[in-house]
Amino acid sequence: MQLTAEERQMLDGSQGDAVRLAMEILVRVGDACEARRLIPVRSAHIVLAMYKSIFDAGVEVCEKFAELGGRFVIPTTLDPSGMDTADPAGFKTPADYQAKQRRVEAAYHKMGAVPVWTCTPYFCGNLPRFGEHVGWTESSAVAYINSVLGARSNRETAIIDVCIGLTGRTMDYGLHRDENRLGTVLVRLDLGGRAMRDEEYPLLGYHLGKALGSRIGVLDGLRSDPSNEQLKALMAGAAASGSVALLHIVGVTPEASTLRQAFGGHEPQAVITVEEGDLSGVKKALTKEPGSPIDLVALGCPHYTINEIARVAALLEGRRVKPGVELWIYTTAENALLAKQMGYLDILEKGGARLTVQTCMLISPIETWGFQTIMTDSAKCAYYAPMQCHADVCLGSVEECVEAALTGIYGGGVDQ
Ligand code: F3S
Image (cartoon, rainbow, N blue to C red; front, side, top):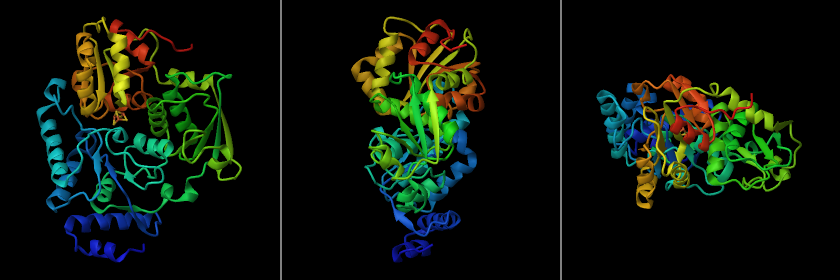
């Protein structure tokens, strides 16, 4: 790998031991990825953050970089914490687990990370511009910023993300390069002339992740003007079931104002048609049978925005979650504050729901609650929850989720 004079000094240790170690890692991994050089990046986002998935080794890595004097040189945000940061005990987080998570917090505080603890940092102060190179982990966020904003990041990995923040550099390969960003598979959406429904975005994402794997699709025929929240749900589903890091959406993605632009003037290598039955098939595959008792309704994967919180508050107002059932909404500390100021928190709490901040259902120890069946509106959550939470899952619209919280039963809606 060719390094600049400054990068050679970083590798020699002239900028301290943490930078030296981070550069050693980047250069070795870069060589393995056949990157010819490093490139400067404007921000980093770190997934090496939650004790449930980084374990003791991850805690030690964070502390090692902090002890070596590491200090982030670019804006560096953090993925969700392994526990509700405001009320870990109230969410039954074991004491030893809390202590480990606090050590991670302390290490990142020392290094100057921005403690947003969210998988939606692009809604929370870390907003890359079109064409900007960044070094991010968190598959849903990487897919969002490449596909919706036209920023450039590979799906980086834990530890590499810390190295990127400490050096302000990443390896120049993959989606950082023009030639690797062109679409190769045409995805024709054919819903019989109708527009996508809100609850179909995560289903479409999940279906495309399976169908595309790591290929770059070009989605045509959306026939709607999706909101940021719908795009967030679409990208999270695609990045969970496949390795999707960039999906061109004609008319949405800055590099895909036309089909021709998205393919760079080339012919697609393959064509996929997606129909209504493909979407209902995803729901069916990720859902236990209608009539299943539900003991947790978990919303907010990725983290809910204030608009999504408002929608749940409107659905719940004047009604009450069934005793024995929990309704939790995962969000950021900033949105929780807004929800309080706007009166939504009051409505939610009166209805028996709870906001849980800066964490999520998959990477916090919710097994301590012994939930049997979780209901969610997120395809990503539905995909991972059986493994991560040791529970069965039902997937449905937000309305179905709230209804399940009120009745304790998943009512159906799946085409049989
Ligand atoms: Fe975010 Fe957790 Fe889902 S990190 S994308 S809420 S799995």
